[in-house]
Length: 136
Image 1 (spheres, helix red, strand yellow):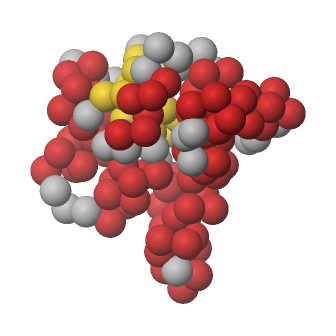
Image 2 (image 1 turned 90 degrees about the horizontal axis):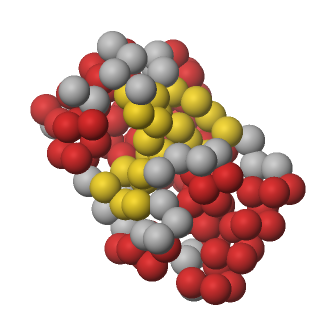
């Protein structure tokens, strides 16, 4: 089964959008066709995006998704994130997210953020359609 690191904006869309592709991603996770992996940094970013009133309900929804792993930031991930930030100028939040995937051995990150292209030799950015093809 393919493991895909999922960037915050796609988690946000997964939880708030009724777009057919987001629904298909949710279904692929529920059907265990792919395993989604997120960094705890995404939880912080979701709180900021959603606001505190909506965040708790949405967090419970995220935690109830089948086949979604939330990875804690440890010393190894933190150091790797610092290296990515210094070497490639990837913003700190995305450095933490990318480092999570790299340290976990994940090959693909579902993202639309162009700065992930700077580190595509370490973890390959993919779009939602590609992620869904991987779920087949």
